[in-house]
Image (cartoon, rainbow, N blue to C red; front, side):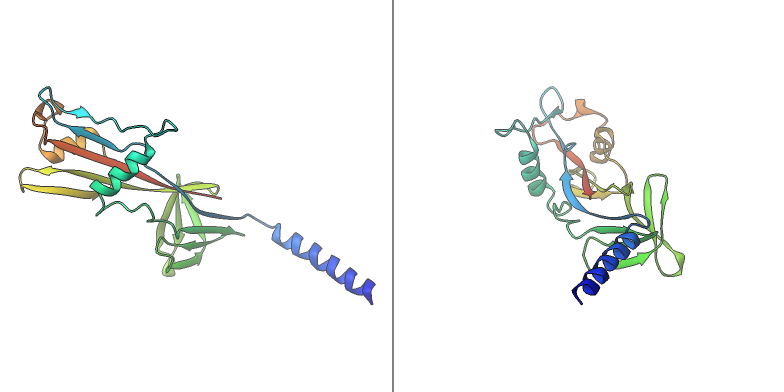
Length: 197
């Protein structure tokens, strides 16, 4: 009887291993938030100057950047925005759980260029992330500046990568030379949320 049970278990394990080896099978989850390109420019009598973030004991400015980003752009920045993100590739299908953790789609998927799409009901493509089956990321583009036309401190989330020139333009400056007052400030960050195996 023991031999029959052992033989059955061996066959079961071999069959399971053979089936699970067909096609790809990997799960990608939130890994880290990259805020390396967070920039702040402050006015001076010589024009706008880049603020240099202080380094921690490890020689990194990431801690200071994280605190500043959370403080100055808290309405648009959320370090935990994609903590519930999950993409599970399995035998030609993708199980995608969005950033809220509530929406789950199981469907076929497609990479168009470097962008991953999953297909909702009716074959409608939905953007998931950028990258490959091994590593994906999403980006959130944020800026903050004084809008002189509306006389309002403004925090914006954008659809494209932010640069010094763009943010200066939003704030009504033709260049750094126009930032002559110490209260003149522009800042932006292209926050990258990284997902890995």
